[in-house]
Length: 313
Image (cartoon, rainbow, N blue to C red; front, side, top):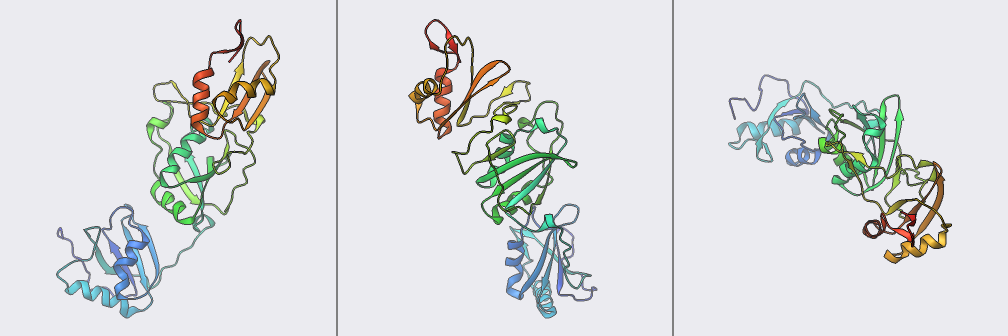
């Protein structure tokens, strides 16, 4: 046991046990699994201590806690979680009291405060990439508050959100996903009171990944689908099912029918939006999936609609 004493016999028995030397990110389920044979668990507190490798477990009855301590004190096999010896002692407290703020009440929507960056340093695509590692992300909304750049990330259930929170809280977004001028980007996560985000438009600030037919907000063109800057200073493009087409050398009128004819060659066109920006004509073309949009972009970019070099993409 590496010279450590698994039990301290001089402490006054309590129905709350203090467990030390836990594996990293030990969850409540693992604690309950260890303690359940000795009685009913009424409360737990995980992630305690500077290294977050300690926990408290409260039994329904004092004798149940004594039974657990007595069992492992006399056993030749120490208490273990994931093969790691767990050190058990009575706690000085007689119950676990959690003063929960609203951000500590588990929910399916996380509030992420992204420290060390400005709003334009971390794109919504990067946020989606990071949080998708733990399950399907339904919706994301980003905004700026006094606390800094923040985002709401919605999952389908509380368990997935809790896993993401426990895994990412206090961690940094990988450096290769950040612009070269950002030294560190730390995530601070809490639970939001929201249960279902109201996303009306797809834009560079909000996305609904469950609704491919949601319209793109024409007022949010600045930054929408714009690539982030990689560590090498070059722009990184993130693929999407919506293409932004800028039309140059426009000598003939470009109508919805013309655009539909051109872009339908590669698949079903769901929506088209034409607008003027900075004296030029641009259009948004929405496909049902990313591969179709990628194929159309690869085939059409730099080509002309009409012979003679007119209406260049």
